[in-house]
Length: 494
Image (cartoon, rainbow, N blue to C red; front, side, top):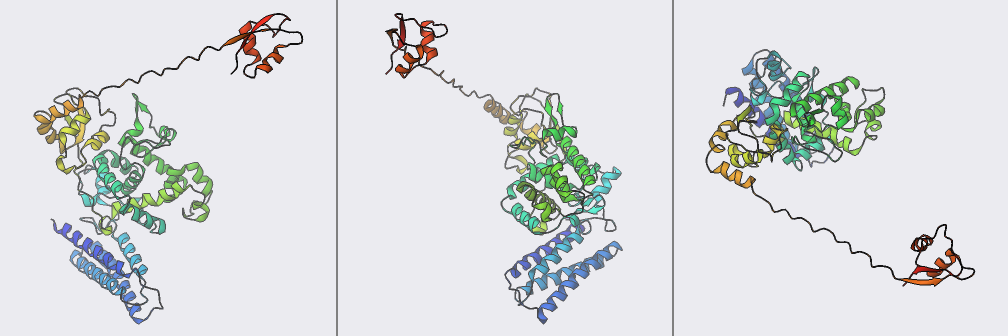
């Protein structure tokens, strides 16, 4: 581990310890502050000021002094938080607020080997200068935090809805969050450059994708929204997501990310860079959001005049996206650890015919992929039907680490033979027997001799089981005319 990584790990552990201590304060009853409480609050203020001092020292190039000041500040915060639980009148919310503020200060400044003189994440600077590919940057430097000159973290209000969404992502939605992260890392080389070109933060892209599809390229909603970023057909077409040789490009990760970035930038212009309103428009429709907001684009998404007009789905959607983006930026601070993914792009030329399902079988759970590689292969090859065998020589997109695995396991040996045997299995087709509709039994008839005063209508009324048209048809009567003394046929009624 490098020195900078060790420092980053140490800082993360200290922040995590401080948050663990804060939970001990949660049940403290509110009473009038006393001298011990004021002393704790003074320690809290000193910790916050010390953090700012450490930041300034780092920007001035005095890294040793910065590290010492930072460590002392975090120790002071941890100590004060631990004493809060045993001090009557101590308000734990003040400690949480300071922790939230320190995370915002930390964004872009105390992360790995970042240049602390700049508010721009090095991944953004490197990509803009063409110095590095999207997948060659260290994991700690991948999060771009700027949104048109503003730090994304400063635009995320840590309010009740966002906190509730954080809890959901860390509990009930955690499997989707982890799957979304893994799926995204393998598609990152296609999706992230589109956002980078549009000057949008990567964390926002991840937040939208995690909420929309969990990173499943072929996801389709009940309303017809499709793809990793769930475009409706008309909206997708407006941003160039149409049919390409029969393939719906809403399912293309790169094209979908480009269209999503264009859409968000359009809405940010309309709503004067109000991020929450723009995200709400993406989910609930820009027309509805414009009608709700009117000319006051500075209004908060959570203003009751706006919030109460929106559908429950949109009220949930916006904080959920922002919470997922926040966790993408600060996983360790919430006791969350994303797996390390080798997501560099790669490809194999098939040495023998195979379908994506056959490749999934022969690749197995290699590289620790416990759920198998089917989803990743589908995401990277969205135009291919996974059941259709591709010819020898066809190019299949795979994560780069799988190139060698393919050569070892999927060209010769037992696994491709097994995979082909399973794929070629014939399932008996049961043809349902045709439905037999029994012909209705012929209706019995009787004869009736027309009497004076009879009409066809009066005769049918006495039957109680037929109609004028039926009797007229049985006897070939035109205009329902009958003659006295003529014998006609009538149905026999039960």
